[in-house]
Image (cartoon, rainbow, N blue to C red; front, side, top):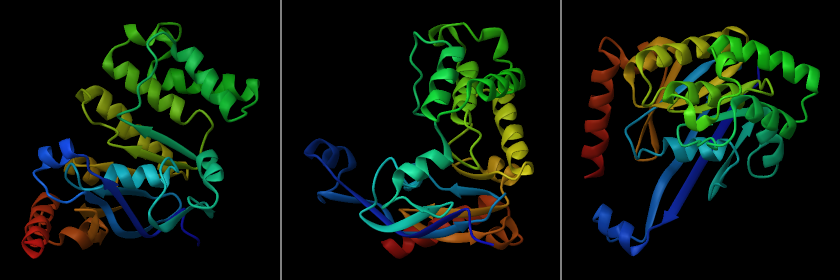
Length: 258
């Protein structure tokens, strides 16, 4: 069976300004955010990228969502290349990031219709999907409320509904539970499991061990832009907890680098 997502030797660098070099206390003018990353995600699998802040997780997901181009390497989503066919990649995925900011003046109802139109969804299909998702997340009572007047949790639920308005087969989520209260976080994790049960492929990034343990079939540990371990939780952690295994890997990687 072909992978739903296939990543091959992705590399991405960024130029650092004088101010950034001062903040990071670095003399180098170029920072390597992702350094030769490779992995596959099977259809219907929930795969987690686990790593600390600054490990390159978000940069990786942005490349896979065809929002930024890699310096080297390539990745394929449903067979479409992020390098040579980014439009097809964007059409096949749902992408959610904690940095997605919904415009305060619009309502969930308007935003769902807007993003559905971008994906050329027929109005009858759009309306039924909106009804199901809005009821699922309790958005229906706030459908006509401006985003500015929504709670943080309801904004996240709206972002989640909008990101899957076109019913994508592949969903890419960057830190899906970051900053959420426990009830909203539970809603999000339950939805991830539902997506996988329906045969959807989910790729997520996180630094939260409990999220990986609860929802992920496999996990890739990313440190300093490199994959240092990849497999099922038992393959990565062995007899240890995932947290203990991660810190052992981190200490080994930092030690080798120094």
